Length: 168
Image 1 (cartoon, rainbow, N blue to C red):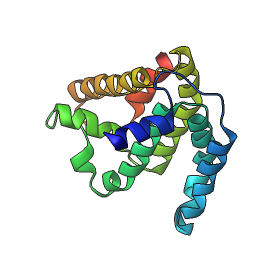
Image 2 (image 1 turned 60 degrees about the horizontal axis):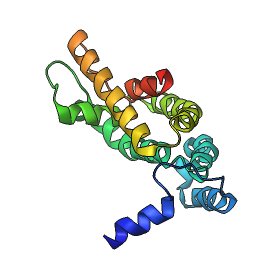
Image 3 (image 1 turned 45 degrees about the horizontal axis):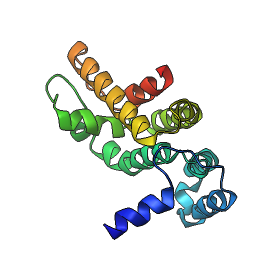
Image 4 (image 1 turned 90 degrees about the vertical axis):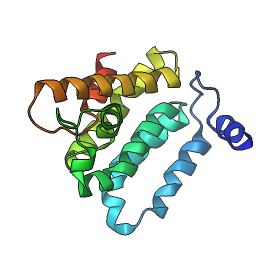
């Protein structure tokens, strides 16, 4: 309970965007020095938009992008475990496929689009981050379900989730 309380205190109120925090933004940007050199070029385009979203209180976007980033390499290494199709349709797969991407351009396009559009949607939702995350997951679930039911191919990616945020 103490850890949860500390985490909630660190991110601030769940449904209110904070005024941009310069210190949080700079602290976040400072973490890129911890990224191994071989990944730094790939990470660089995400640093400013991701840290900016977090500093402005859009922590739901931060969580979505970080989860996608953490799952990127495992999903590329074993795409059959992460993809969705008629044959593999399940609730677990409908959640997991949203965190998998076919390649780095697919990942980068989805996440940069989410960051660009997501802050506006988050603000329109009165910065209700749990609602934003619910919209993101529900949109991805619906997109994956329809893709699996209507297509004979396997699918991966946050495109359904990001599309739902764009439409909102």
